[in-house]
Length: 204
Image 1: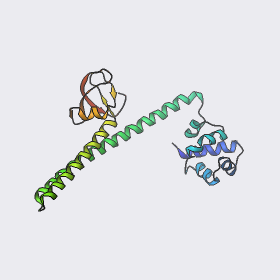
Image 2: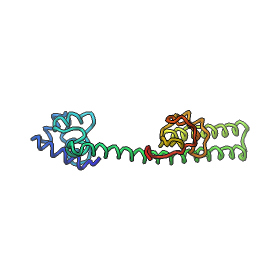
Image 3: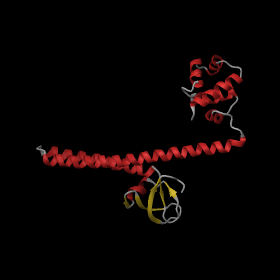
Image 4: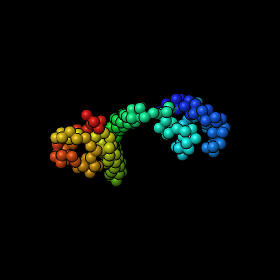
């Protein structure tokens, strides 16, 4: 969202309603300083007063968040634009999550082998060696759990039979045979098993 554009829009609508910043602030039970921050693009109205603000200014929430009055002619375009932005944000977040999955996997594996190495080659009591190895396995298993959880929720799996893209259950991901991020699973759409690849986008 463009805070500068939204701020100018609020100022324009406030003036059109013949209200000063102080008068608008009093109606909303806030300070005029808060209104000034909105209009200069330094902050956005809190969600708790957004509906009341829109009512006072005679606009919709969609108008407010767009920074302009949305007519019926371009309403659908604005909705499509916002949906597209949301999809792009999700895809970007999923890519970051999958990178985090790799980092967690490598870190937990290296930690396990490092602790096993230390337990075997450093002079210490048997119970200390066993404790180090146990800690290593706990870290490794925790890393596997979080990595699998990320792989389940980030992006989608694509059925090789019907092309359906979906988010499987954690159990399905956990028990499926796999090669990297490609897993042998049952498609909820066509009910057939296939080697399904991880993809980022919901649509082809």
